[in-house]
Image 1 (cartoon, rainbow, N blue to C red):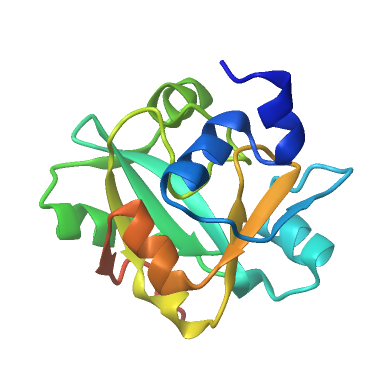
Image 2 (image 1 turned 60 degrees about the horizontal axis):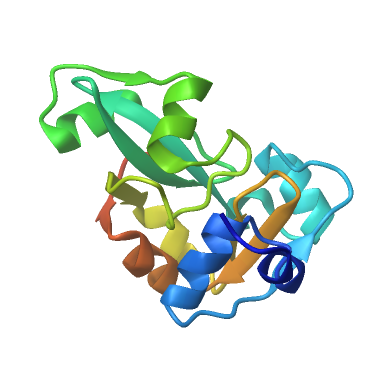
Length: 166
């Protein structure tokens, strides 16, 4: 548990604030009065494009949680994730598994600073932006970082797992 002092220093979730400190990172963090649970809501609040938002999505590959980092204007192609991982099946997980795996609620999952060590796949499209915004541990906060650093801190493997558009 964190002390009230550490909570007051950062608008980020205390677990995520501790992860940032451990990595020596001090990114811009913005707090919003209203929840930004979707990429569109977050982009509107920040004043950026939805593609500049990083969605941190938890799936299960043969029952083992895996985190997929995807830009906010794209959807994950679970078949491409399955192929990338060599898994028999890839499925979405429920809110309970997300919280057990990451320590955060859906809508506030950051790309790193999780409760457990999870395999991370980062869609290559994130590199199309100079800066991206991701949840800082709760649905009211986001932080900015360049995508290469974000993916590196997440331990993400660069892959192509977005749905192809016609």
